[in-house]
Length: 275
Image (cartoon, rainbow, N blue to C red):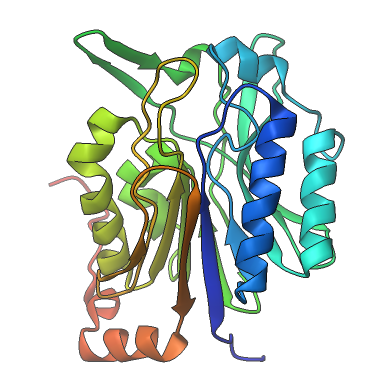
């Protein structure tokens, strides 16, 4: 078996609006910029093609699997640049008409769709005037997903999944965890960086987390602060608010060095019964 090779990673931060065409144009410009800088794996944020004025806007924009203009754009963009392209999430059809699947799709350098993950953990939050209930319009996914790439084992997740470490443990060992997101400013300011660095440290792998970052048409403020974290928990690149890139190299020697010097994954003991 060929050992995985190193890879230049890129995350695309956006402030998506309600017009899909405009969002695809912005995403396309940033993907091209990342590819020109040598990125081989590029990740777009959650809801990159649309964040409307209301949740229903995303439901109306849903596509059927393997059929739709956003998926066509993703396949063509991956093939044009010869990159692995991860659609942080797009709305796909659910089993009921008033809901959607929040789906992360992966395309290989030939433009072929090679993996799909549907967000399992649905965000619910209420504080003062701020309230969110994803279960009202999203149908949850049923299973975690990882895929093998030339750069190693990649674990897919979306936004609120970040708060559930058992999701990543179920798919261990990972070389890279992806966290496309649209964290709120309230929860992001308090927890985003802490959770990302914790997931990198406890899994001794790279984490590429890319968010929506700014004020949207609905008035919602997303946290942004996209970042790439190494297996020691060090932040390699970071972006505050607004559209832009984060980039860093995934180095397998770094993963091996950390796992050899601190073999926490080998020391792990599981409780099979509740005490």
